[in-house]
Length: 96
Image 1 (cartoon, rainbow, N blue to C red):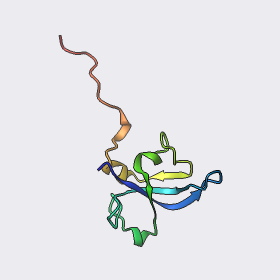
Image 2 (image 1 turned 180 degrees about the vertical axis):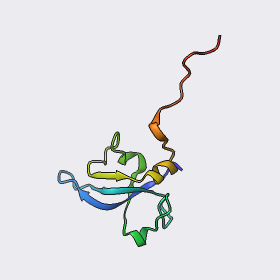
Image 3 (image 1 turned 180 degrees about the horizontal axis):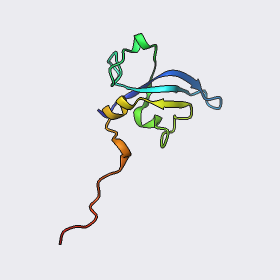
Image 4 (image 1 turned 90 degrees about the vertical axis):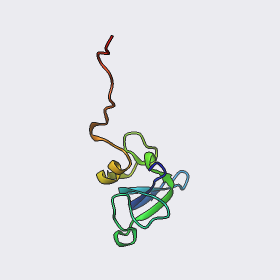
């Protein structure tokens, strides 16, 4: 799943350019479905949709729209391919 957008519990507007961005707890959402990647119903939970923002853009460590994000859903992150520790495998002592 590489084309997920974002839903969040809140939103904020950048005062400089008027851009609407997610705030609070964020979840991954595939447009065209009525639930998050982790299985929560959008209407029941009261999430606000952000189809113009992709999932990698809200990661607090690297994302450009993560200013007001307080929590990223672990189950959605796992569903999108995140792993514990985020350390990639590397070969240390290659065989001759």
